Image (cartoon, rainbow, N blue to C red; front, side, top):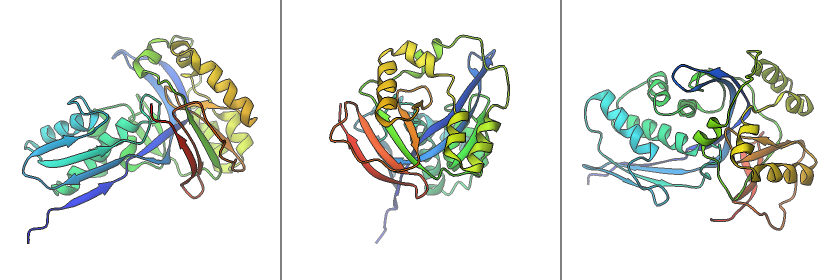
Length: 289
């Protein structure tokens, strides 16, 4: 029998523990510094050996899906077709600043590299991923990393969160381009602001960590989607902790010392509590919209 290879991957989501915008670049992008942290919320990517190239995704079926963009970029790099059947099952909320599409694209590169024995290094894949999206390169290795440039210049950060993380995604999304179009100066004047946060993360004291956390996209996101203001305020009041925006939103998160109980209902798309020290989900509530 010829057994066809089938492998299942789980592309994770990320949050930004801090994000500082240093200025606007000549290429139109913004120069930034950020600390990415992977969280245990996953899509499912199934790759199968095939003589043809087929991509299936119920939620985002079109050719502009970032997985297909990544696939074509990899074929262009190696100079030959890379046939496969890829099925993507989405769970990570979209337009939420969680990097779902970027993670899926990165794992498409990883999966095709393995399936076709291309023997490309992580560095090769990061370089290619960096050309596809600003946070795509992060997902090649994941974990916790410092991102500079557009977010594609990476440095590993040897910390891990030892706390509970509450993630809340409202019923509405935020368009990254719309949020960035609301960004105006003055920009963060001090470079290396992430160093204070990195140091606090290494000490492990949650009060120090939250003091150093900041996201320069919070006000632009609230300008782009005004409903975000009430959503973040209500969340902070309910849990008596500051809430932070992830990426360009719309998802928000709270870091807490002790886990909280699952509420009876939630007026949004997704609410979950993660134990970051064990990298697992403790409970979740989701509303398909």
